[in-house]
Image (cartoon, rainbow, N blue to C red; front, side, top):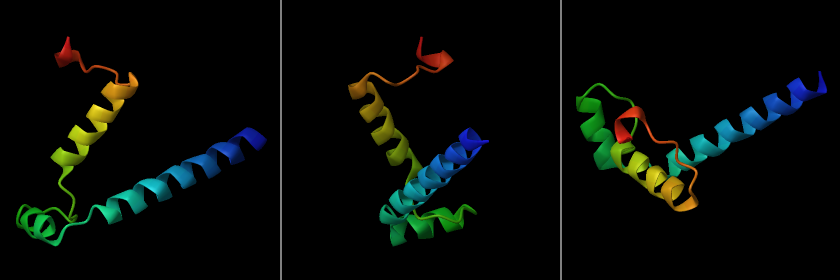
Length: 69
């Protein structure tokens, strides 16, 4: 049971950190473009993915997708 509580706290902390990071990346211009496409966020997800992939590559932690072989 203690493990479950630890996992829940860790997951909640991670979610809070990710939401805070996304809030920091909010861009009004991007939000306008995304709203025209029916999305409710102001973050350029392509840039976010590219940045994460670059960081994972540098750290050697990125798991290649099937298409990357």
